[in-house]
Amino acid sequence: MGYGRPMTDAQIALLETGPLVDAGSLPELIGWELKPEGLCRDEQCVIVTDREALGSDGQIDLREVAGLLDRPVAIDSDAGLVAVGAARAGRRGALNDLRAPDFTLPGLDGTFHSLADHRSKKKLLVAFSSW
Image (cartoon, rainbow, N blue to C red; front, side):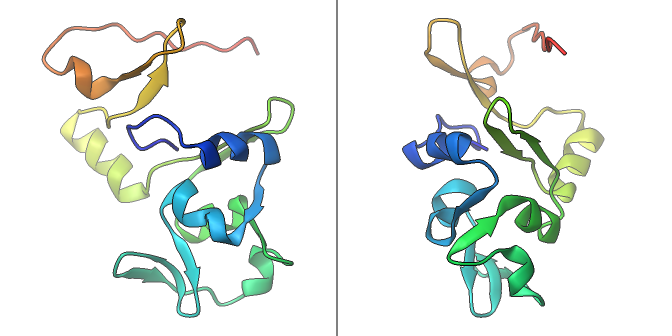
């Protein structure tokens, strides 16, 4: 969700509000905006045939947005976490190139570390879960 940068205040708020977000916050959260022509990012737009399926009262369901953008989404309601993954083409390219996409994660001391900061260095990344 951070696209290789530390999370913004709006992205942190997203963790607290769950998959329903204010339509106006979409650009800051995921880089896409809901316009009359569809979901748009720069000059690229994805047609939205059923706007009611996205949400109502100015609230947008990120699960629906992720589906329209062909992106995976993971939601952990207990932890208050919503993660929207990279586009399929980007994931496929990373697999073909055998190169991990850049990401940023907080260290134990709270400072953010990006994978790009460690290019050409050997690092071991351990990922685990308590479940």
